[in-house]
Length: 252
Image 1 (cartoon, rainbow, N blue to C red):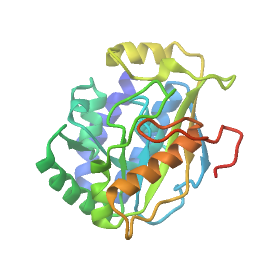
Image 2: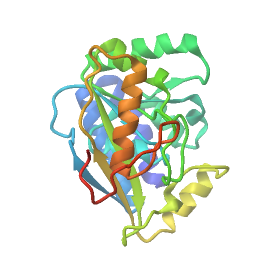
Image 3: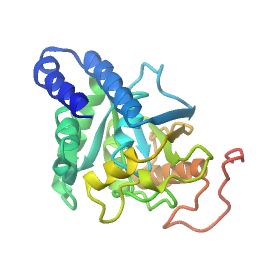
Image 4: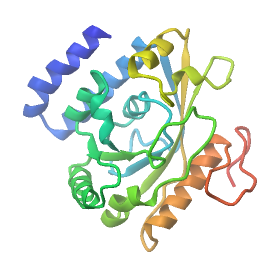
């Protein structure tokens, strides 16, 4: 872990400033994949995988762990819109900041215009932009309401949104709560819980893309929340109760 973190420092200090966005994406994908291998986290990707898509888009995922960014980026690197508190995470905070994460301040409406503009620039460069619309982490056993304001960059830029469901499991398919970064757990405590696991399966399932043309950000947030809930087999908070497809069901 220490050596891999040091390699990130060298890459971000000496390679990133002199290379293209395409090179940044290749390096981020490699670095994220190797980090997961070191931690014995095995990603399994299903659904509408964006790995071979040439188009830039936005990925809207549920939020469980600090691992989420690297699980997604090991498939298709993305510049995430994330809360500014992530900067304070030891080592990882510095890495994701230097790698191009777009930090937003909580409750800062004026900050939304800045993030929208930066997201537009990232999309124009061919980068994908990722966001965690819940605004906080859970243990993966529930889905919180999606904040519609975080979808403003997508609706303002006409970017397609790809819903993504992240679930960490033990080898027997049961939920691995040790992978979550929720509650009062510190980053180092979280890392300790993860490395004590024999193996963690990170299931990353992509849903059908959402075209924001002609619909507002509230409707985009609602549709994205419904699709992520269906992929996880969970009832989304803040919405009328109804049947949500289980893991073995076909989405309806």
